Length: 279
Ligand SMILES: [Zn+2]
Ligand SMILES: [Zn+2]
Image 1 (cartoon, rainbow, N blue to C red):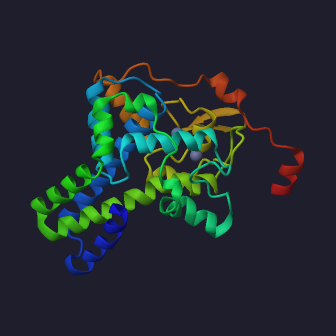
Image 2 (cartoon, rainbow, N blue to C red):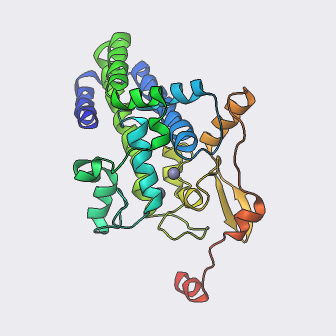
């Protein structure tokens, strides 16, 4: 419902336009909340690809929850279900099941939220064991409403419109990992799913579009890796840069990164037939 309202709220821009201040506000809200989702909720809380103090986890989860994409238990429950059953009928948001094509694209981008799949089968015990994360999950509507109110207080209707625009774009940015990054892009690593390294999604999500790497090495704090002619090549990964910044400030440790040997060993073997077909 909140994401639907944010979409409708973008209509305010017809009245307010988008001035420089409001545009900057929308950009800052997009970047900061995207980083909270990618670096903290996804790579830290869901996958434990590094360790961080409780306060970093809580602040990051709070900022991520202000995106209006539900709370940490809900988010992590669905995400782990996605990894466990990737691209099968039990994956909550694959673009390939039960139908592929445009229907699959719609379902993975937004439609699955309007079905019974919205409700996770069970909530993750490790997240539920943290009373602060648990409270955040149950009161998940408060942070986005508070941020909408703050936007209104700071800049009136134009900044409220900017909040709606930022929240809508943020939603579709994150959702593009579920849809486009399972449909289009390179597959340098051998996985049993349709995950792809998608450059557009990587830009939109500050590094989460290198999704084939992510499915091959789920616990890696860095997702910006690919293979070219058997050699490991680094790809831009702003979320990893942010995690490195946290580490430099003493707020992150034990970053898990696969070795070059492990990355090379996971190369997808392309058959001669496929190469011929690709020209
Ligand atoms: Zn995926
Ligand atoms: Zn993941």
